[in-house]
Image (cartoon, rainbow, N blue to C red; front, side, top):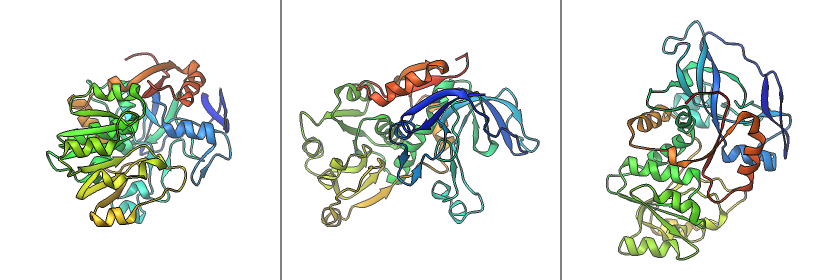
Amino acid sequence: MQALVLEEKGVLSLRDIDPPLTVGPDDVKIAIHTVGICGSDVHYYTHGRIGPFVLREPMILGHEAAGTVVEVGSAVKHLNVGDRVCMEPGVPNLSSRASKLGLYNVDPDVRFWATPPVHGVLAPFAVHPAAFTYKLPDSVSFAEGAMVEPFAIGMQAATRARIQPGDVAAVIGCGPIGIMVALAALAAGCSRVFISDLSSEKLAVAEQYPGILPVNIRERPFAEVIAEATGGWGADVVFEASGSPRAFDGLFDLVRPGGAVVLVGLPVEKVSFDVAGAISKEVRIETVFRYANIFDRALELIASGKVDLKPLISGTYDFTEAIAAFERAAAGKASDVKLQIRLADGP
């Protein structure tokens, strides 16, 4: 079948490839409808690696996906042919110590779509464990279903933050994940979420949402805005979602004494870390790596209408234009939040 294949760093092709598609008793086969382009997909395209994960052979890209079940394994009871679904792309070893602790996202054996050497799903079909496949409610489109995966990261961050109703949050970075984190923080009970960036276009997208307050740090320091808004006390929770090493300069000036800093963005290089600044305020520091036990709740929030992700979809490309879609994503157009590729017809 034809797929979008990353041949090597900087080289994409639409060509025939034959990944394994055998349906086991606990699996389902899915006709892929919509796939979102993630920053990690783009990073593999432009750099050929993320940390220890190195592209050494051709790999199908894509892991934010939704589609329709076309075949069901003999032991699967909760899904049927014709069901519209989204898929959690990481499959752990359920016998591992991490999985038994409920931390399957950090299982060293996890197999995650489009993470070398595991193929992704920018192809007509994929086979996936039914346990990590979720039926879409009628109110959720395929495009929204493909947004559950990045929103789950925001949900994981909000859960790690232990938000209390009425908390004030600050988010550094107004990219797709930063906005997802801000929306999840509001859904978790934050009264206000300040979000900072250098891009006025991205901040304008975030500003569409009541409760999200954009701050352009070209015009005013983020710490100054937070201090003014909180009477000099600081934000209850600070999320670092940019991955920029510069974000760590003055990071603890944003947070209140006894508050929390949640690290979501993944810097590509080592950063300086103000240990004294963290200790002097006894700041609780949390980290986020993907998500665990959260996918179904993320889907429920979208289905309820409490979280509307449709404004974040900046463009949709047909599968035949997938390479052009990746070129646009790699160019980093300031007004783009999420680009998607559609492989099938229908809403």
